[in-house]
Image (tube, rainbow, N blue to C red):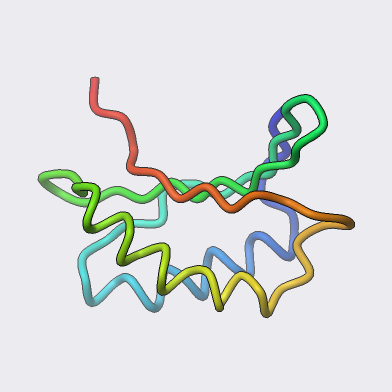
Length: 87
């Protein structure tokens, strides 16, 4: 079950958009999703030409400490930074 951007996630998205704009990376979507007993905070990034695995790793290193500044949800969650699917 996806939970779309609430107030806190919206603020997080705006902050990340500011940080990634100079890198021409788009913060496409942020949502919380419960899968079984785990909660995932998924951040979907996009860029013209796509983002390779190294780019996702570098973005995650930037995102992780920023996410820690926000009270995303009660309890634990798994941060999942992904590139938008191309179809």
